[in-house]
Length: 355
Image (cartoon, rainbow, N blue to C red; front, side, top):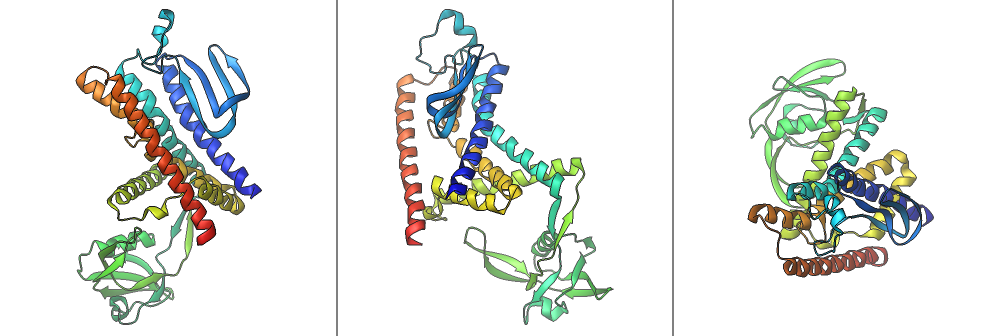
């Protein structure tokens, strides 16, 4: 339990710090005054004031915030503070300030992946066959357990993913497969068959397969700094795309809402990853950071995405959205988030006591 709480505090602290740092830095870049940069909510525990900004640690460690001068559109602004007022900045500057929070969460993931890749390299699943299904295309074509796939239709195969992609793209055409078997290279012909399988969302999908399973052999590939940068962006994009698809499928009802987790589940997972080692915990932080960014971009009032929606409308109609409409939308947004929080905590408790 202690490990879970400590790991959860680390994860939350890093995520919130980077998120709010994004808002803060871009706000300062555009000359917006920042009155408060707080990690946590509630009473101030300690901190330091520099200029007009109070950098503080607050009592409730479940979030954080940046309070900018003139942040509320109906706030009374001292005439001398208008040049540093958020509300009085051009709408596109306000859009960039708001978007900077979730974008910095994306940046955090890229940085973490880059560091992990530089330290450990890329872990690649070798295209070594661990099992050949009886009467499958691979069995009929002569593939055997232990074969290392070298090329398909003369296209080099460096990983299991490379091989799977080439088989899937075959559309059922015969494949010329070169394999290494007992230090000899053999040329075999295999014709994939279409099969209904489950994707990661549990949906039925049809894809071309040859009936083999991986041996689970992993190769550690060292990357140059440039390769690590490229791969870190690829990994971030892949996880972000998967997260967006998950949100869409939740809305469509393809994925059960029972899969949603809240702070209790995150704390449990953070504790598990912390026990596995620093690298695992860092990867978990990157994963949650991407999820946090995507969620914050949702057009729900009170989230960054809700503010971006209103500012985008303002940019189109060339005047701010009616204040009363914004206030009602904010209340609706708070209510939606409250219901969501209650539901995910219920899911967390149900997993503990009824699973």
